[in-house]
Image (tube, rainbow, N blue to C red):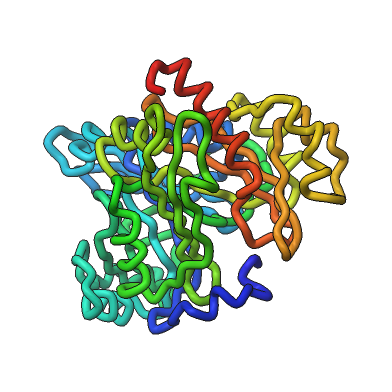
Length: 375
């Protein structure tokens, strides 16, 4: 796990609320059945669980897909006038819930509330013949929420109210392992508000900071701070726009998502060439940097254990920090609006986030914005 041998910056995080890892991410989507097919077909997720009419749920249906330690819950309303439908109408498809695995969901909730959180869901015990789960939740930026999940007394497939979903269609996994980090976009001037929230309410520490001198092009700029819990298993970079000559990718996101929300989900792999090749072959589109990026990349990052040719052919970026190097690539948005996308990352020791790639990456994003007419 990347939590091993943590740099000294993690020591500032206070584990008064121990977090064991990411439990699941719930996306509100307009068609959960089709979204599940997409994530299975394109990203190699496996069928896990289902809730809906067949389980007695009359308001919404959810399909749960998993790959190694990553679980996505894809949820759609079954009728008009629901809060889920209103969320989709405003934001389009996107992440509503970041569920965090904890030992004690009641304790986590009480600690968060004591430190100034706004309640999303009071602790609730849900049970079936496989045991019980306790969940609670707090509000974060925009309409995004964190749900604490305590499942030590549960042996079921996912959560009470879900049944096993085991259709015949089962495309192969592509080697995704776990959620490395998840990035939120907030409005101008709000980044430090949410940095303080994660520090005060959840005991996180700021481990990295980037300003517009680090993250800028001739046209756009942004600022970012990376928040992490004490064991390093949960990392939430937070972005806000900075002044630029034209509209930044953060401003574009805020316009089309109509508020703050999750910009991208970074998922880890142990073999990025194999994973990205499979994604490309299954139809996933990626941002591309100019081929000239690879002319000097080894001068910048030094020796790596990879052959540069397949990295260049696939468009995979390379960066280095004091701990090692990383390989990363970013998909184009995975829904109609230019909002949420995925990052595929392989860490070879590095604990950082690819600062050396920012300029090339954001110029690639600007080329996409120009095609969309939103730059």
